[in-house]
Image (tube, one colour):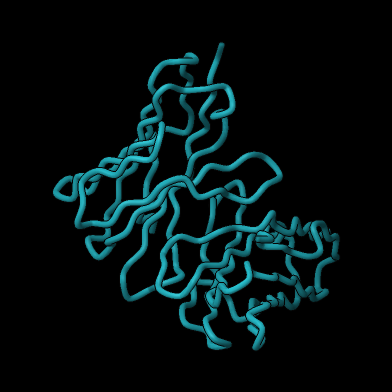
Length: 112
Length: 113
């Protein structure tokens, strides 16, 4: 079974731009969660989607948004990028009713 | 506020010996705990988990112990192998927040020959 895939793997943007990251979960997994990893803050939960509905949300500003499609693929969008948004963005998927999440390789976003 | 804490940023252990990683939590609503291992430039890999109704779970070389009264869990790796050198994250979740894991800051483990 293929793992979680994330595209693109690396991205460089400038302040003020917006960016969209994509995540394809493991086949059959309906829950997709997003995390931000930075050296100072560690792994921080952004949001979780299940059956196209946002079920949980972390403490991030409204510039961070996401969505999930009917095939469970998910996208996250960051608008008006700031230097502090430079991070590794990780997507994880899990089957319904399971706590174990399976992570993709991440998208490394650099904001200049 | 950091609800999951890993107070040891690093651990060095000899090959063949036991590695013990510790994790403390403050939220009494957490009822499921997980350990992940992460290599550079890769996403975290799930290792082992434990429900709050248990105090021990074992899977091969990995054993997780949970002490609910102390709000403490630990991961034992026996025997440690060079391939175990990685960053280990402790994570926790609440039953009414499926899909939301709260992570500790991680412990860098180095296994030396």
